[in-house]
Image (cartoon, rainbow over all chains, first blue to last red; front, side, top):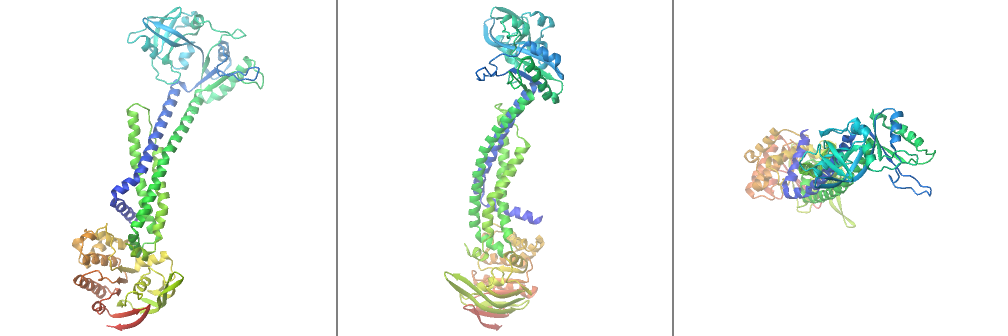
Length: 411
Length: 222
């Protein structure tokens, strides 16, 4: 125990004797570790935010969208190029599928909307009552549609938060009228902002699906069914997601009369799957950024090796003295190795502190959310120890092999 | 204490071999104080290095404390040095960035450890208790050599080897050093072997060994 303490103390004296040199030596490690920590924390933060955004939409959701259809010539069309989903599909699902709580078909459209002297092109979503439940929407003021509105197709709308901001800066839109093409629509409510970045309800105007179908001539399929843009399902239990997906797939294949071996003309994605795909993609990006930053760690390590080699040459006489006093090769080797690790570990710790400060600054300035996770810190510190070990090994070995008589004779 | 049997040492010099020691046999008893004299290049320092386990003989046997040490590995020799041998060099060989006390502590590090009490005692024996926190650059040559002696004796070695310990000192400091070494020998019974050019110092020892061209040419009792 005491011996270890002595080795550490001697290493400290060795480092402290050349303060500026030691500082410059570890600068590479400091910058490398700080860069790794900052970039990784930004990556982790972005990943966490996107995943939480998706989860705020509801992680128990399954989304069915029209898929690519392969035409007779074998040319595969773009996703959504053909509208294949219908209101009748949604009804069939809600009648037959088990473990499904809500089935929310909706239809998206885009229209010029005028309110007073403000006007904008807005996304209009025609919904059924289940939609509100599936996406867990809350009303900020006013009210949602009544069952009568859905059945009768009354011209009423609920506005998303940012649409409200654009059309009615400051004033209360509830009870006011907006014009959409030739139609006059009454605003009955405003949605609470969800702040989600993807497919946010903030940017849309919600209307009963029946109303939207009257206002815009909605196309029908060859079988006369009402086309919708997409169908969202909520499952009762997230564990049942994949079995629900299987059920729906076979149901829709039957309904769409797809023969065995034919490609689906729709895609079924769960939010869970989407979240994991996205977070995987961001994770790969983060790793790539970290790897680039790690190159500077490598350069820093080479700097440490350089200085340790110089240090061994400078202290040849000291090595001779220690050997005369009874130091074995491994004592000398250990001494220099501890000194190298001491340097890189100090660099690593300063780098962690610096990286932490940088990433919390990025957070505080509201640029990008960051998340310094414990495993990045542990990784950075162990990597800096490993760099000390790796790049200190050869210089320390060099020093330990010196002949004591030669070493004592040197100046 | 020291038993040398026909020790030789050759150094390669180009294609030829330089014969530095040409068969030295020598016995030094426990508690003896011996001076080694001889012209430069005669092999005194090489002999001292072999006795100090810093170097290995080319041939011959060396028994230290009854144990054959001439065939030991580097690491075993280091352990022998750490436990049994204290060195005092002509050029002091202190570590300049450490205080006198820390330099003396180094003497204990590879000898199995010890407490600060022993460091303080060693410094007191050489009369430097009040200078223990000074660095070598803040000490005179005589004081530096006294720190070096303290470092050598702090682990209570049975053998102290000194290579011209007064060679870099003025005559007054030199006398002080010799009187410290003599009293250590007298009080603690340490075996002492010392290379010197100074006949006066040599005559303060019990035996003088004269070396020339790698051979013992004369031995005399004082």
